[in-house]
Image (cartoon, rainbow, N blue to C red; front, side):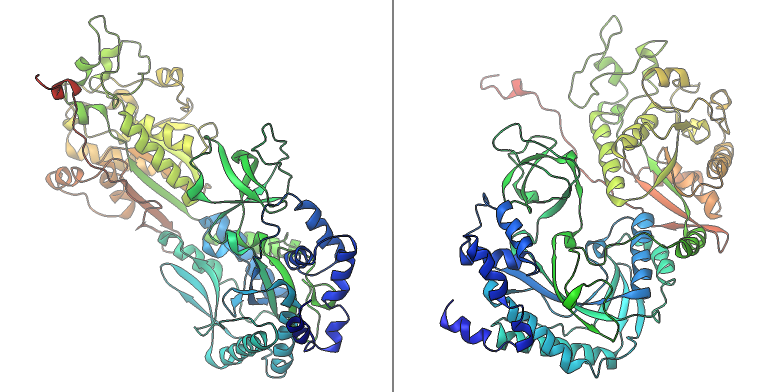
Length: 623
């Protein structure tokens, strides 16, 4: 060890020397490990035991970065314990279940005291001493209760620490930064902004009210001991995605990774060009090796799952229940939600009953073929003997079988290829948003049933939820061509074409009840009656009711629920022209006030430009 390092270690207190670097390093050196890799293993495992460091080194024997002088990154957090932590973990679970994952779920409940910084492996014991010295100096002044004030905005929800208490906590952070600079030669930037404990961050705006109600169940005055905890992470993978391995996998090729359940894989989303569909390239935390792996053997993990907990300092008399001897963490995943006791589960059920809402998502179908190829689209894709062929890539690959042949598609057109793509994009976005679809209703028009099918496929619900066909939300028949209503596919035909339609649902308006060129008032009436039946079919259900209809449905199917008068038919006609494919309206039921409210849809609109037809032969020189 260099002379400069010896002088630094000489500053460490006698108590700390009892388990200094030497006591852990010497056995590793005796096993034949080089000093720099042994120190790296101790830093990567939190300097807990020789056995853990030794296991780490054996697992990383083929790690190409083992000899690289890359230090860990460290950060200091103030973490709650006891009953307050229990309530916060309860909020973490429920907010994720009801409102999907947001940025706050990436890390356990905490108040950030300093930004991440680097510390050389051989100076880590000095960093521990810096934490102890700063804690000892602050202990007498640290408040018995940290007052927390709830703050909410459209993208942030959390507790702020008031000024007087925040000053004491920030003084502790400054002391730690100063001691770390002196003892461990680290550059630490203490937090100077308003101290806060984040509950939710970067969530969808329509979830704000639910999150606020869940947050009000957390009483900031709950008993709590605050613990300053020092964590580290691998600085190379800060912007990578983290996957948790679910199943064992033995490589079939030399460029594949061995997977063990519980291992974590770091994946750079920007470097996946070489991977085939269903595969990713990642780096194993357990071994440090890089290779291909099947993505369906993993699940997304949280950012902090791979962090290592080093030392803690508890501001109180009782020991930190999440720490072992000498304040050392017994688990890498501090703050991970645990099962609730029975008493808390019962109170949670009563809380859910008041917060869970019923919502309605009304969606316009995707692009249809006649929008692009005009009224004569069917003549462009059918042979003289009535068979279908694909004259352009934006025509669908095939058409479902109909009992009366291809002619019936003329006034009941299918989705174009782009329409199918739009529907799948919307379904993928809905899956990412985390909303819970509990039932699906569609207009009997083929384009609507197809849109619902593709959305459900992306949501992985195509086999779990049956599509309920409701003719009552079909387009205003006065807008339909011809003097008769279009010939629409029957439930038997849809089922035969592999649409998972419900054969038991009794619609508010059966197909034969649709009349050609109906009055505007009759159209509005059947939309209102149909919507009332759809939202009350299973009144005990909560979650999102998906309604796939036409452009006019975004107005005629939502205004009755909102208690608004109908629009003039001329205004509606102009409005519908502005509604894009997969346009959406989203309504939430406010049980407290006994009404429905229009809120922001869970996903954004898909915008795209036109694409002209192209004939290569027109570009041949001389023609």
